[in-house]
Image (cartoon, rainbow, N blue to C red; front, side, top):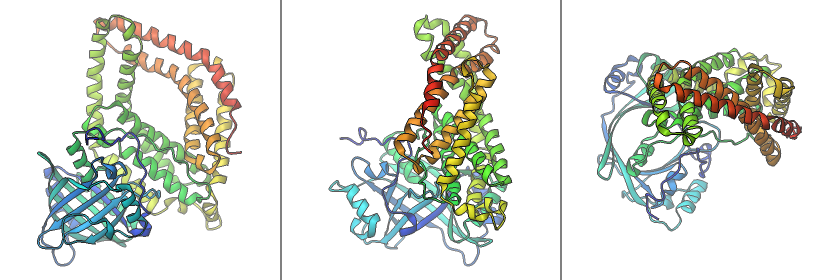
Length: 528
């Protein structure tokens, strides 16, 4: 199989197969993309002033290895050998541990070697065994390299000691190359909460923008001629023996990371799913925080819910344009003369381009980066503990299964209440029922691992089907809002056809609604 044929998929975030970071070294690092002016400003920042003797700038040449089928890349594992001046090369293995610690926590093992060829036998323990099993008898070959001039500074903030690395250079893959200008912050020792707080202060004073794509990932796209793809949420339920305190942190980080990993796709393409997944991530976060707030009266939960809602609303126009275009192209357009729809699609495309430009401006603004950093800080300092008295802190040590069962039962009852006489409800009340369904579905996805997997899957499927049918009426409202605001005379006929199509689809959905509602009510609550 050729490298092009074996191109890795990025449709879902994959799980790592290496051992946990806590067992073999854990790296906590934030990476920021910078423009030329921002890079210069960061170098001059008083917050990043070097402490102690200055270290000279280094030239780092890192060669990354993989199998012909890109097996390491598929598992988000990076194997590199780095040279710096006359020092002996350093071989490094990095992976994304599946331990709920978040996107910016990685497993890392290093060994000094004598040649630039990797020697897998040096990696010991489970990490080494898993790596050798993954590679098998396949040859390892250099795939790409990075050539970086790095200036490092050591700074302290509170109880955190932080290494700031200023990287300028290029990524090289065959004849292709791409520039690099980044600031990396790595927690060397001390408080992770103080580390995030420091990064937040930097983000308020410098044009820093979080970048979830590593140099290795950028280089792999360069080598394969691909671009970052939208990433769906991983439906991996939390195990029932996890305590509530740990579950809160893992859910917050999972939803934050789902939001973050889709920035790259938005930056480099018009893939509609990127905007959609970012909004889904923000909705999932809001739903989770609402559940947690009922048990733990943490005011920060509500503040983050408001910030998430504001971001999701700002991305709304781009998503509406994508959804309407998909509706036109996959709905009425194939059944009529295509030419009749071109004026409407042209008007829609102009709005879509404007909406995407605004969405990209938003991603490059300070708020999304600060929002993500602040969420990381909340988890690092376990900010919700401050909302509980000493006597009540014990509930955080309880297994999450008990909290999940109570929360899912409450959400289930809310849906049943709002859905009474569902087929005869007006659109506004149907929309309220649909929102309640979404919250129940997200909660079921978060906590399904604490219960029987098959029963949870059946319940989630019934919930999703009902939610989709209720969404048909929402599509009509979205289409009406856009089409009635169009002043393109040539688009009038097509607009009428689309509205008629939407109305018919809503009626068709209604024909199936009673059956879907009955199936939902009969679905066994898997948490009982």
